Length: 323
Image 1 (cartoon, rainbow, N blue to C red):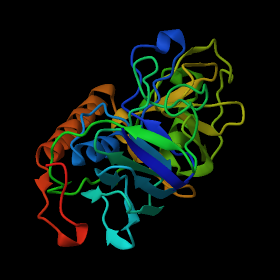
Image 2: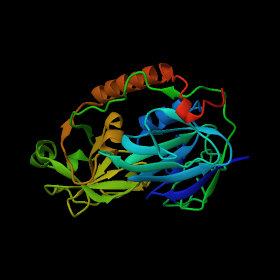
Image 3: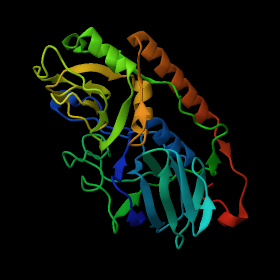
Image 4: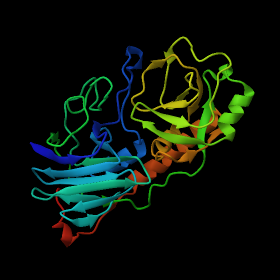
């Protein structure tokens, strides 16, 4: 069996796959990656199936070794990566051989990074998924954050060359798109204008469950308590403090705060990657337009994944493997 040995690891590092589906009615959150496109690109770069599990980390990666040769790729944003001290690059795959150390530094201008390895992280699935849900200790590696000294099993890899993107994956610079509701009737027209007309700052109070936004207080004229109902990723809850709370990958499946709006699915990964202290703005779109934007992004992502290019042999990498 192949193992990934963790020598050092950054904060909030977990095992994730595409998440659990169809269990919200039973109170089971979907979990999965905070930045789905970056996660999918990482797996594709090492020749994995889309549902394969990889590592997600926040801020800083860590250092790693393996017991047998594997391919690896790091995505999410710009980051310093060293392979036995030699600089390599994100959004490309490389060979990691026994005796070599992979060191992943601090992410720049983003929050969440991904380390995919050929064969995928082969922890035991729980409720149909290898994703970690930290709040309930479900899935992943012992249901917890990864730490130095952990040894993660890897699956058998399929034959593939090392790959790179033919064209970069670019995030839009537009405002974060939102759809009003489902409790927008709890808020006055003036308050909804404040939501759209003023900037909000991404707070350092954030994790995989939710991220808080600082800015003008948002008050609900109909009160800040409702009969608990279902939530979805991107739900913008408004507690009595008036500070916006955007629910993310590990959200609770139901909540009792009114939700003034919902972040469009296409922009939720982009919001997740906004660094703390940076200002954002919201813009309202219809559900139909939000669906069009999501379809367009999925088409663009399929194009990226279908047009990965094989990298030429690099003697500094001691040759390619597994092909």
